[in-house]
Length: 209
Image (tube, rainbow, N blue to C red; front, side, top):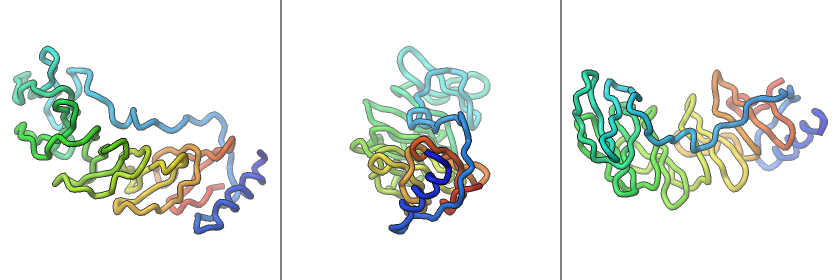
């Protein structure tokens, strides 16, 4: 597809309330978007460290040790992530919840999968759909998405059906799901792909020259 055809394609997709794009600047061999599995990785190393607590594996269970190597949260979890914003996601009997730095389970284990907190929200999965919770464990964005990632610059990439778009922290689709592949926003721009054409958009969804 020629660049001019790409503009026409995007223009046709923008008719029903979608964003209007400008002329594309096609980029070749750009790195593809990360898959959700990379955004929510299991703990698999004892030297992972954030918030001064280190994930520690004891037998087949995980806990946390301090900077001096002392086990301060017993190894009773099937899996766990690092602490971010004072909370860590932990797996108990196949379900995920969150503990604080004292080891107390402050958000009950109830999710199929869970990611780290960032900016007050955490990515979670329920019934094979992705959404977000707040620090109280309340649903902030209803789990309705096939795939999703953590927020970057207050926007998150989400998959609706087989297309990607972006939501804000209220769960509103601010950039319509018309893309085959996208990356998270960095420096107010994001890499996108429609068919064989690739380029960048700004935070309003406009295609950058």
